[in-house]
Image (cartoon, rainbow, N blue to C red; front, side, top):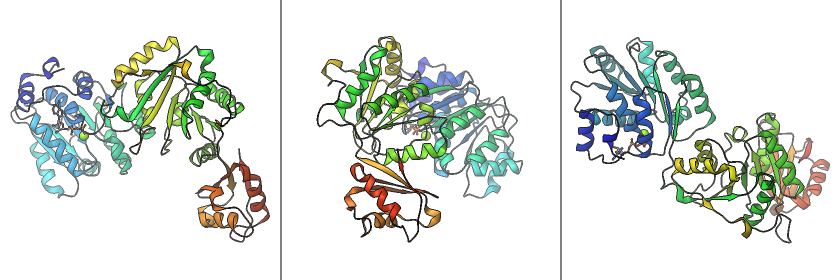
Length: 461
Ligand code: ADP
Ligand code: MG
């Protein structure tokens, strides 16, 4: 696709030709038409995918040059990024006579910025802190703002700009167009979008360069055969650590029961669980006391686990971005990931939509070649570890060495190799112990002392 098929006017098309922008990148193809209509947008695409031009071109197209008032505001996390974005706006807008783009970043004297604003400008690119400062000085006039862009919104949140961003958005006209670009979609981005955007279009692009690290398979079966098929898939791939996504919390509960009954080390995570339950399930997953974590998208949000062997879609998500978000959890840190989807014959359309959005074809795998659902010898899907809870944590000055010491010392008598991951929280701790030694470990900890004191010790099942 080339730029002339987009509704851009000739000064912009000419510049694009001069800059040798021959083809529209996927994020641009999907975002520019939406933004030209004035709609809100949430966009996700990796670095280098051309997000700047995706919002810059529609801004430039819609700017009224003869009207020297601030019409667009772009927030970026750092001064360097502000300079880059402003540079791109100026470059793309170089055939727009009199276009004024200002950089309003921190770390520079505020006075010249105040003066420049007084002279009038069309577009400002700034860091949240400085923009808020200029707003409070009443130097920055928001009345004519038609578009506000949050570029690299996730990074701005990480850098602690949430409140500043919220206050800036709150000070701009409610009629504004709000554009949010982010490389990731943590829950706080969703929350920001919900609060400040009006029915935003969602655009997610997985570049095909990124896809080869994840093998994406699809098995098809009838709905009533899904649980048996999942067991066969697990027996085939033997993941040490995998998340199984379901669309409904009822399915999470059912599937957790079915897998546990089949001897699989699995537990479920549901959105309405109490925080303490959620914590202990996550601790078990991290320390390998369970191998499969069953979750819905909502419950699975914000889960951050390194080194997942596989992500399995027990149900296909309806939104391509959920799919992308789900499978992005495997194949990190330079390892090839595995994403397996279970589809029913009725899901064909969903599969096509996913393939369209990701630009990757799911490999149709043969159900016949999978092992049976029933356990064979030597192919256990049990977890190797079990978790003990200890009612003391960081606030009690508990350190991993104290727990290790209590288990392996003279009184404990276990080998260090039988002790797994030790996690210390504020008021409690978890320790993983070899499954067959867990009763012994429990007995020893209950009989003995840690740091010379008695604590409550429990098995976490
Ligand atoms: P992102 O913000 O997604 O990380 P940028 O907007 O910084 O990416 O774009 C990366 C580079 O690609 C920039 O140098 C930009 O000028 C260039 N670029 C963007 N879109 C195109 C295009 N359609 N054709 C050629 N180069 C492009
Ligand atoms: Mg960028």
